[in-house]
Length: 219
Image: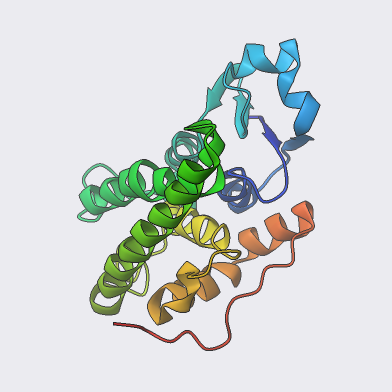
């Protein structure tokens, strides 16, 4: 199957981009940012004007990063990035994919784009503050889970949900309380960054990703 991925650096295209490298073979990258996202031709692919967008096969279109990740992983089972329907890890894998995009990413969207919710500056500031507090609680829950059930979200096997979590944690680098400050989240990010597919994705996107050298758990 042929793949074409619309992306821009550091966006939600990071995780599916890494998965495409894990799949191997040729795929096309089309950088789409700023005014490009407002083009009529692009809005025909994704009316929301966001990235990523995946075009595959005979011109079928898929958007929403979590959906693309799961689709790519399931279409290419040899990557081992998605547990099969009868795999004992399947339920937990689906739980984490849903949690990351519906809960963690939703809180992060409020932090990055409070202007999408209100034009009142004071309210925007309150939203940013409260969303970061909420994210910190979510990181604590995830870190405790990894402490007892890690090193990956589903134990000793790496799945697409781990790519997704590492991507979200990178988005917290400008926050007062970045997710990587927790030791087990920090360790997961380091394991992810060591994977060839993730390394190639960072190289393609010209991203230099670093993590805190000494993550200190807080109570």
